[in-house]
Image (cartoon, rainbow, N blue to C red; front, side, top):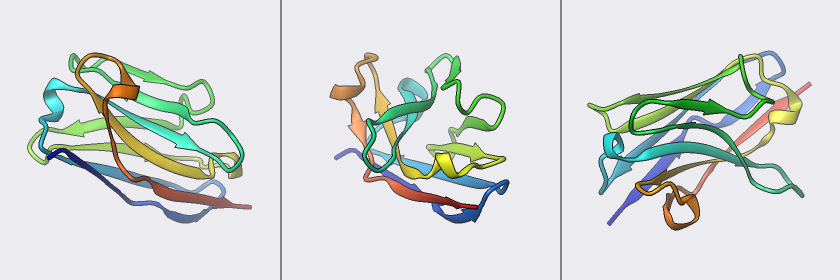
Length: 118
């Protein structure tokens, strides 16, 4: 059974930082592309950052230079370091994994809430 469990969300003031973690079980993250998505209230879900099995990273324009995606193979965990947070970063952040590039057919975590206050 595959599980992706996110942690690290919370309430932070604008300009602050948070680090989200996504620990996988049932799959090996080194053989999967991994991504962080977010969905704000009343908005569509969007990809925030992704990293392929070959370590190619991509970021949404809105987070470039502020967010960093990384992996720890030993812990089978993916991280999202979020710096210089803005109120518009407030959303539920979810972790996803795919072997074939089709995220809708991949594995998803339950999500963790990030709230950025003024």
